[in-house]
Amino acid sequence: MSKLPARAGWHWVKQGFAVFRKQPGALMAILFSCMFVSLLSSILPLVGVLLPALLAPLFSVALLQGCADIDSGKRALPNLLLAGFKSAQRNPLLKLGVVYAVVLQLALIVLHLLGSDAISQINESPGKLDPKLLDSMRGAVFASTLIYMGGWTLTCLAAPLIHWQKMALGKALFFSVMTVLRQFKAFATMMVSLYLICQLLGVIPLLLFGSPQLAFAAVFSIILMLVVVMHCSLYAAYRQLFGPPSDTPTTVEHP
Image (cartoon, rainbow, N blue to C red):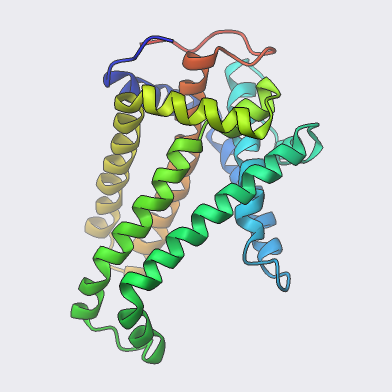
């Protein structure tokens, strides 16, 4: 596999938006279905805190399969939520969820270690947020976010490799990490492009709406849309790096 230029990451983002534009409602419906199941699972005692992370690979498979169906001219339906649950690869996907949960816990530990004083003060006086206190949290939040997003980026190809290539967890993680490292410039460009788009689109509601509630609702909607677009971009990256899923014709333009 030859190294791709950095601009390949931008092409993945453009291709992701192209897939999203074909059936935005269908993809958002799949995301909302995933969010509903995640919310229900989070209220369970003892395991509820970790279940959303454990189920994350199954949710990713649902969105990626939706992208594949759309790319092949099919209708993406909300019942794709069950694609990962019904898959013969369900167990490896759940084990991948354990990896995600470990990375999440590591990020939270770093957050508490670096920002323990600020977190304690926020918990004691949640209604009185000192701007200086929030500023002191920036380093801790940045470090924990970097750990989580770095872990997610390195393993982002593991779920589709398990689902479509029928790989074992260890092999999928190996190929995912090695591919991301080899194509680091392209993946970095993709992630930075999505981040900048999120920041740019997030400013617009703040400028247009006088009501903080309306602005927050608009920003939250933009974030949800970009979560889907990120999976669409990841699908485009997977297609170029590993080929299309066996039942999906090649229709995405390569850079």
